[in-house]
Image (cartoon, rainbow, N blue to C red; front, side, top):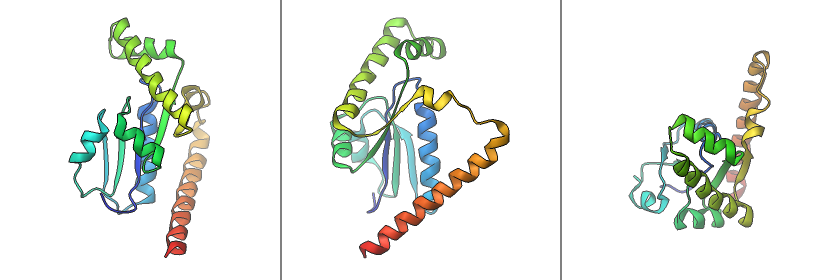
Length: 171
């Protein structure tokens, strides 16, 4: 990977809008770095993945439901950012059973495992932790979607301007 790279781990609980968070992050990075080569994918073993990732990528957005030692180090040192989504465990278990046709024991184990990642973010103060209800409870009315899109575009422009200003100041 090249200098100035953005690395984001979307490591939320299964069935908690983690894919939504992943897609939003990918879109924001594409808008912020339109000429950047972005890797987007799913990997549980980040350390092994990073050893094999092609150097052609400028930025990485990785979705996972676990964090290995390498991922934890990257997040703790600030070399990677994390977005963790969660929802009521009962709902998440039921959703795994319904959507993926998982047996109860497997769904329970998947959600129980996610508490380790949640505890990591809470205990270290890392990650952007988002509740499922905060994502899904107040949908944008269709008449407001254009305004929401424009507001998002303005936010992306501000982030891009801020990043450019920081680069200029640091030179």
